[in-house]
Amino acid sequence: MVQVDTTIDHSNNEKWVGGRSPFNVAYGKIMIWFFLVSDAFTFGAFLISLGTKRFFSDFWPDPDYVFNSSPLTGDANLPLLFVSIMTFILILSSVTMVLAVHSGRRNDHKGVVRWLLLTILGGATFLSCQVWEWVHLHEAGAWWGSFTNPDVVTKESLRAFFNPTDFEAMTLAQGMEAATSFFNYFFTITGFHGLHVTVGMILLITAFVNTNNGTYARRGHYEMVEKVGLYWHFVDLVWVFVFTFYYLV
Amino acid sequence: MAHHNQEETQLSLYEGDQSALYSREFNEHRYEDVKSEDSKKAIRNIWKITLWLAIITLLEIGQGLWNYAGSPIPHYLSVTLFIVMTLIKAYLIIKIFMHLGDENKPFVYAIALPMIFFIWFIIGLLADGDFWLKMNKTRGNSLPLVEQQDVK
Image (cartoon, each protein chain N blue to C red):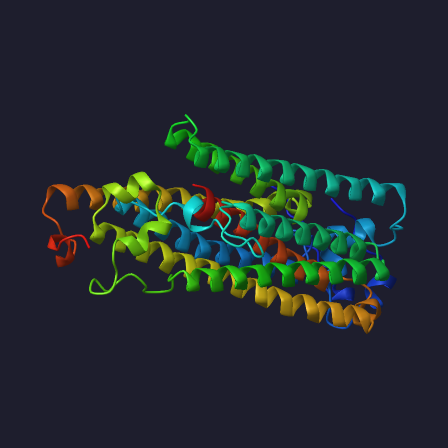
């Protein structure tokens, strides 16, 4: 029979009285992890739904042809360049975040301030890039529900989004359906991700202000920086998957 | 198993905040100097992982550009390589950057095991999409009437 220790120290009962804490993780961090698990399923549902639609379609826009522009380069054909820069910006902002958490754990106030500021700058740069890309695609005629009206859409107007072989082989209806699905999912998924980045920015700025005014120093620990950090890393993690399934595959 | 704090530390805790009681990291690092050798080693490790993430991302971009230029790699192999590289990146971010690797086993399982559901979601829904495409092709066309119009 298993021996269970049932003695509880009641002299200290305003604190944990359930014996050893099984996860050995602070409550707030457990909860942010569980939130991220649920959020992973939301993003997963979006991406799997995209995959289903793609399996449903004979033709699909080619990301190398859709995303081939960068700011300040005019009409130059530069597939993948701009989104690669965006990806590196987000990875770097994740690195500065993990360094802020590292400093916070060691109660290094100055380090937290410095790295949080750099993380905020990285996030702002990424969001600006995303705004540029949305505006650029909108100017190219892509938006939610574009390419649905057969009286307006011509096959020629879809040429920019497909590789030449597919473009010659597909009918107008197939092209319209593929382009509509592609851009509906694109704006929905990157929009939902951008919303997460925006929320992350608000959290980061809040943590930055609270670090500066000494809230966490008085509290004696920088756990809030860790919790914001977990969320921020998750946003980066989602982008890793969006990058693969929207821009590469 | 990390040791718990002594009673005098508990009494000086922030009101209503019991974090320092349960969290492994608080007990391990809170009195460590950020300029100490252990801390510097941890920072070097962070930059090492950054380098790996950058290398894998460059490989992904390289393969993407190679595909654009017309690589001889078959499509399914290219997709498999992309997914493998993505999963390696995800693993590094979760384990090192999110510090899940530093937590205890029960917690790691509590976070990681629910992801099993994704296996079924992916297989089930992608197979469904594939089936619909086959059905559309073989069992009459359910695409809109525009199909019959001339291509403009």
